[in-house]
Length: 186
Image (cartoon, rainbow, N blue to C red; front, side):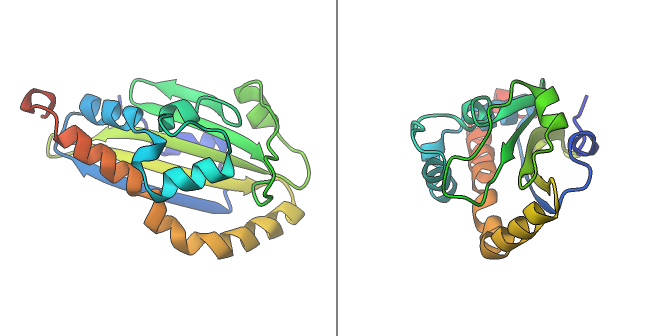
């Protein structure tokens, strides 16, 4: 069963910021998902460096899957070919200003003034031609008007670069999945 983007609405239905990327591969959904799960921070030029700058102390060989399963993130939902993670806090500060969330219920109930909730969704969908499509979507929603103003200011500065950085891991995962032996492809 394919994971649908509509499930993100259950976690964060009215985001102020939404960024989505899709890449299709001539590979099976299983091969594409395995390739995406194995991608390491160091394999991405811009995004890996940006993440390691923003969250100091991360090992370069940490996978994106591993990253989204540890503090400051919390796993919200997982399935055979999908994963949702979230974090909360003040994403515009240079400090590591993220609370430690115990689980999905903490994310859902988060309402501290001056903060945002951030949702990261990744999943694979079967493609009509027999391949698979890797989808990544990030959503950010402020808790209050003050956080909304800060988020809009931050997005004005970094939003134009998101398209250049956000799709990089998907393209690498597609190349890796397509390089697998033909038995792993449709």
